[in-house]
Image (cartoon, rainbow, N blue to C red; front, top):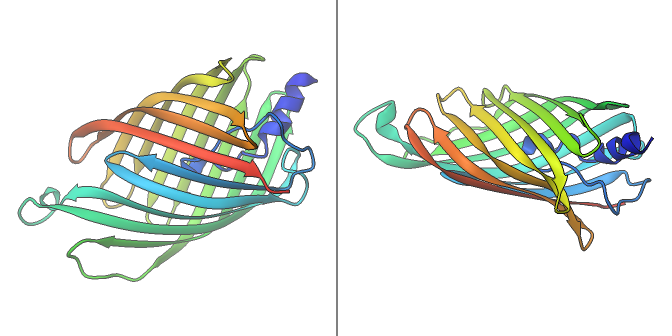
Length: 241
């Protein structure tokens, strides 16, 4: 019974993981909360900032319909000569917005969520001709499970047609020092040919002063430019009502 209660509290943040955002908030939360506000920063050779909200028809820790909206801005450095002309490093800027709806289901072993909805993407490379926004469809799926009472396993996959991109992440954690600590691995790719892999460590579900957070960092590799580096990510979230 205690295990199922923990999974129900986890449900308020299912759906945010794919925003390089959030994960769990199992402590000090009201059972009747229906709205969660969140924000995240993903920093490294490429960076992205996102803000948004998740709203559930029923309390977010129960089975039911959910709406998730987000707005983000990011940039990354690219070598133009990797695909055209003479080598030159330029900056690519991206603004992305989406509103997806779906449902989350709870079981004794974990939580499953599936979302779908429209997205729009603005993508501009420095010194290049301006282009208009690209509309598309966004698909988002997540699975959260507890293999043991003190462990947490998460799998997230997101695909969008506006940018032709796919992002996936898997993580595992063991409860220690007030959070779930463990490894994570992620892959991002889009139709421009850009791909990056990351492997690192995360601390999920530290809660204090009414705010919960997820902190992660590790090694990052960009395939096309064959450029290794480091990354760090921070997500904050809290119940609104």
